[in-house]
Length: 118
Length: 110
Image 1 (cartoon, rainbow over the protein chains, first blue to last red):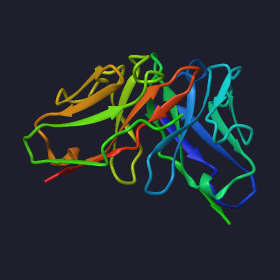
Image 2: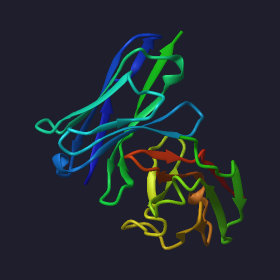
Image 3: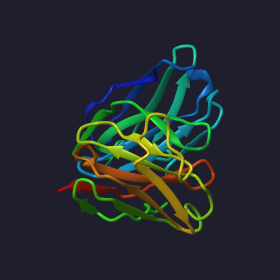
Image 4: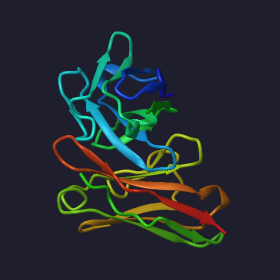
């Protein structure tokens, strides 16, 4: 069974940094492309970033480009999102998710809440 | 990337059918048959219901079906049940390894 468990969320001041982790199990993590998707309180889902299976290719939404860094450690079955220069509008639940075989996002973790205070 | 357009809310009675629309552009929905739909209950993670426009993952009821035409897509739920009440999101591949979601639709089962 695919399991994705996010951690690292919390309260941070505007301009601060935070690193999110996503521990994966139940599948061969090193062969899967992975995503981060966020959801502001009471709002919709927004795609944030994607990394390929070996970590050599990353891409970001314009809203986080230059501030967020996605990475992975395949030996530890863990996905990361390093967030810096945080803004109030980055406040959201952050989900990690797997990418299926055909450019779709399939399995999701339970999310971790990041709150950026002003 | 602008969000795909979905109606804010739809409703239906148990046993009825409802359809949720999702409208994008020729750069996303219209260019790829890579449209997926997600169900999200309050406080829960999204769940994949439809992928590649019309395919259902294992375990998803045949009451859920998807279609696409041009720059638009639709999710139809037949035989509405109380447990179908949730938020629904469409999502399209938008090229260059980017994705775009719809704004979400709240389904109320009357």
